[in-house]
Length: 255
Image (tube, rainbow, N blue to C red; front, side):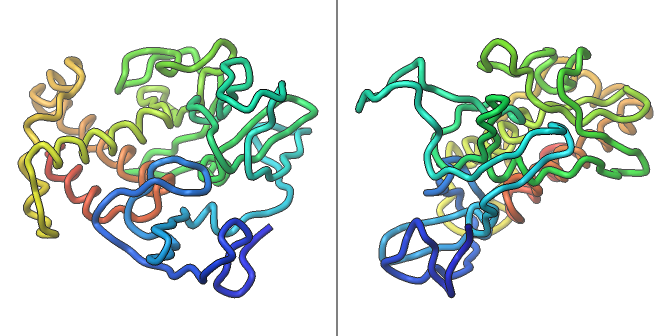
């Protein structure tokens, strides 16, 4: 499944144009937050992630060998109720967050992936270190300091990027939450224009105690912190497009 000309099957009233803004948006495909560039219809206030704009009818993923994922506009339901049903709620097996819209679903193995999560790279090379995408990792995330993703259901730990030295590990979910917190802090400041410098004063954003302490821990802390910044920036860009303003905020915040 994909677009036809400048149109998309989920929005055939008007063509969608590739645009980029400094404000976050809610994707009308997967219903998740996006930043930066998006495919947009101004007349209908309709936005799609690039990953939700260009879709395949079926796809596979190296982390789930033997599973074939079929694209669905809505997550599959277990019952026929019209209203929200807790028993029908499905969770992305990559980030651990609920699936509310576009999804890649494997009926055989009961697996689900957000379109953006389905395109995560298996290997990232960041600051001279190699990080691999893993599931069911038992070590703690350096951001939330937990093994399991916050709010995820039993059986879904959520994917993490883990360095080969096993010193650095970050939930995919936590990377997306970090970017969201940056925008919340920006809103508290009350910035009303597009000046990049408006993003720099982000003292309201609270860092985990261990990371806040580490940042002040001399040379070793500075090296560790530099790599953490690079990991956050890289994963967030992959998941959310190219959030230029947001990434500028992160770089300044995490100095």
